[in-house]
Length: 639
Image 1 (cartoon, rainbow, N blue to C red):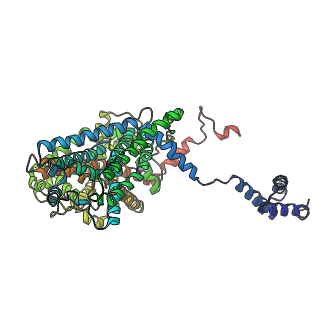
Image 2: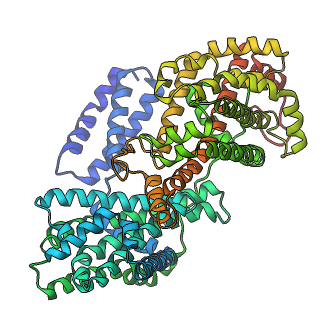
Image 3: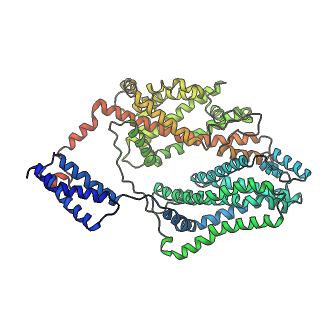
């Protein structure tokens, strides 16, 4: 049939279908019959009029109906209600042991603060600072012991308090990823401070007064810290106790569980900020019965949401209690060395290599590099003890300068810095040996055989890079950022190439120059990653002013060191030294963890340039050409 005849024969039917479909008053039976006729016409048009307009028209009409019938609806309010009604309570019930553990731990920490204050009345000054204690004593003398809550701007107070409570709660959760240690540190800090604070008022004869004032908002605020601690422990336990999952799979599942618990906390954190700003603000004018009522109602609501209701839901849906989300499946992929990679692929493969082979190269790092590092740092701290007795504008910069000898104020600094180039070359050697023995089990004999042949060449390749890293102040590194790519591939080329020493050195300059653009992008992405994950221990706004007691915007490490210094001050005058040593431990672990990643990116960049120069991957594919796998069918087997 000619196309024109086909159109003339069916156009009224198609027009009728369009009119019915767009109409509000549709006849379902007629519409269904017309739709079936139209799809038959579409099949006919696809067979005989493949390149004609009528086929496109009918296809669009059918597609519009199909999309309308099968379109996905947005998440309804009922779905959100079900999450809060069933899913969250079940998740809280599954984490009941962690909630109980966090509560008991927090109470123990608070008891430690109270008992310590009983035997040492000046202990509150250790955990809260002299300024806060002196202000509270002055307020007690004036007859307004909780005058700290009397702020003129209640709205501003609400925003500030709620933001701070959010920060503390989510910080308590997120630091749980560090083997749950960070969560316990923050819970200990807040628990001891609470116990010391309440016992301080007891010694002043104001326990009930302070209790009724503080716990109006404290019921929600303190409970949020405990529950956030339980969520952090839930997340961290996934890393510590993976069960039958890989650690990464277990961490992903536990993080999701912890985040669900944290989501349930948000309304209570906001409520705590509101009560502190608008109710506790007026605590002096409120009758006693209203304060007790608010406190009891607040605790009752917490108990209902996090104890009684989860038990009720678990008993109502027992079949759902032990149901867990499926572990994320990640197909095992073989890392190909000889492959031309763009920047995204290079970064992705580097992180995958780090994750898979960390256990292998870290044995060398922990067995050889870490002891050498401890020795170098002990020497420097002993010789520069006076520099440990002060705070630095950027503490991480000051502490690294001491440990690495990068300020070069004496001959010893030069010797230590030189020793660090050797120490760093050992890290690069461990990584490059892992590249060359990916399919082999760990063997000290294999490592030492590789190091004997390649260590000196790797040290030569890393020397310029380390000289820039150690020798130039951090605030001037931006000006050499665009020069580093010219030497970035030296270490990998010297450590992985099979040519003679002189030819490897020449090839290192050639490869670094050719890979310049990709190296710039790689370094920029690495720098962004390094800065991002450094924020808990070296927050960009954590600036220490020597005229103040602490930084303007503290990070987690500042909080930990602040507590360490206040406790140490009771036993020694060198409490600042102890705080700086604690900082050094964290900075060294971070530094030693980042260097292997830099070596890995350099290694993959080298293999990428080598593949461009020698077409190694193409030659390997030619060798496999025409060969079939005896154990696996290929598409050609079915042709």
